[in-house]
Length: 433
Image (cartoon, rainbow, N blue to C red; front, side, top):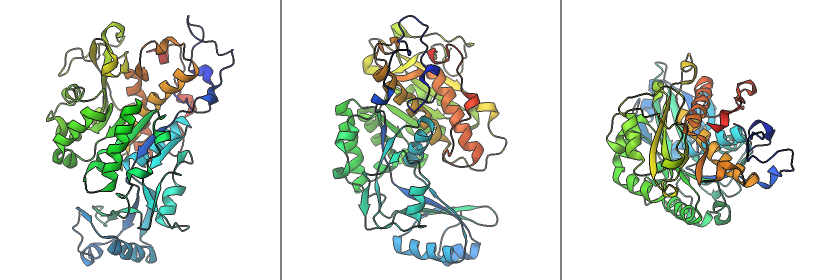
């Protein structure tokens, strides 16, 4: 899948089927302004080689995560830079990673909202964030700050133990007044993270709530990724209520799903999550990932794959159905799909950071593709009902799985090239499943 980018549409919209709009007729795909908006705690990940004496010098607990003030952060950063200990500086943040990957996959624009250092110098960490983020991620609406940009140090000792140190800088300072309402109301989706909802004392908390309220009023689906399982456990009741009130799509890994629902079984967790939202993405590591959603009973579609029973009997029976919002269904039916890792997963995995964000970027691409296709081919049978996704949840599983593999395979949380062209599935009926 590569639309809504600048691609040959003949690959994606079959014109031989009855009721299809012929692409031989003029279709102005450029008239479809499809994009997503994301709110993030902008930060830079900095990997540094150090020894145990360095950690002791700054009283940093080895193997743990510590928050330090901006002044100490700058002292540590300059010492590491002067001694050439820095391995690399990379743009980070769950939402930032997802927006970048979405732009690479779709070749379509998206908007990043957050706070960033006002004075940016060539070669500094803020500059690295901008230079290593896709140019299709529009940052013109970022809030400038006099503070330093948020930084996350990853200190690697000779025994390969990783110690994390975070300096918040201005990453929590994004305020509601900087939300571009005219852009948000026409977005295909609003992407947020549970991290921005950690403390109601932070301006970004209130900005996130305000943005979700605006999205709800405009009918824009809200997509939320959960934070660490400890954060979910700490704010379980709040996150459940918030999801039920505002969220359409909830993304997480199996540990976060367990913290949210109490269910150790990922499939049962998916079933319970659908009582809160319209669609769920749950990654389960070496076991692949699950997608769960709603479909209207009268337009459900049976799978042609063998039926599978786990904690739910024949759970994949209707996996060829497309996802819908529960409120759009006359008789809502919970549907589920699962896929094992693409090609069994990479031979060597050095870093799992970003795998879930990559999978979510594929889901967002499919959601925006549905909005794009509805705009340029409004009379298509694919829009006779109010669908949330363009593809079936089975195909969404395959796509999310493939993108996640690519991130794991390159040991980077961000894609820096599109998926190989030869692997595009263009066979007849692929997109109709």
